[in-house]
Image (spheres, helix red, strand yellow):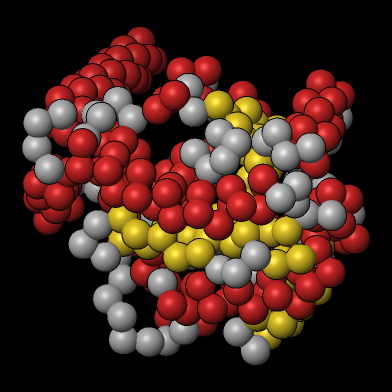
Amino acid sequence: MKFFALWCAMFWKNITVRCQWCFYKLKVIAYRGHCLLFRHLHYRVVFAFSHVSRFLGLTSRDLKLRAIVAQSNRHCLLNDNKKFDYIWLTQRRQLLVQAVTYGQNQWALQELADCSAQLNAIVEPLQRAGQPVILAPLHMVSDILSTMVGASAFPGKATVITSRSADAHSAAERQLGGLDITYCSIHEGNKNIAGNLMASVMDAADNQRNIILFPDITPDFTQFASKDKAEKLSCQLFDRAASLHSGIIRLARIMSAKVVFYHLYYDKGLKIYIHEPVSAKKLKDEMPRIIEQSIRDHSTDWMLWHSHSLFFIND
């Protein structure tokens, strides 16, 4: 009897492993198929395939659970009548990244280039005048596309300060589109990363590089990177006591930099909204206002609704 139970357990485990392997292969095939389609069709045509898969319920359980949290958070904070689909937001982000990277979709690349040109029209005059610049994109549409837009701005080099490991992006991903991008993590205890960040800051202060830092990262994404309460800015967001990561404020003061806030949004194509550059002295007051205004105006494009605590985490 024990032998039979053990045999059943091993048989079931083998079936599970084989199913997981098959699902993985199907995902790889689907990814390569998308990339192939992107090379020949308008990316909005390829979107139709994801609409079909979502209609058929072919969505992972994890994504469905995050969608429930996102919908609840958004309803609690805004309670507006805008149509919001977190699952489609996530799928669209993945498809757009495929379109502009391995898919090399000409329509998506042109829209991205238009966004880069608009941002460069603000950044280049500042850099040529000797004014250090920090680029502050929000988590709208896609963080990768926002980074690519920022990295294209004069002088064509950028360092992204990220809450993830600096090794989260492969060398191939960093060079997509011919962009010169490096990554530095905020995680403590890595002297090499700290040294890379210092070198990047010095280059940025000499107008040889842009620093890219996402200012709307919610505290629960960074609380494990640092326990220091001084690294959080206490402020008001959506008429509530809130916290933002204050790293961009301290960095702007060190560099005497102007901060250019911008975000992508999707309206029958990729578009960009750019705020007036903000001086380091005004950043503490202006940053919460800009973040709240941007989220209110383009709430259906903001990617962090699934963050359980949003900006209102209890210390």
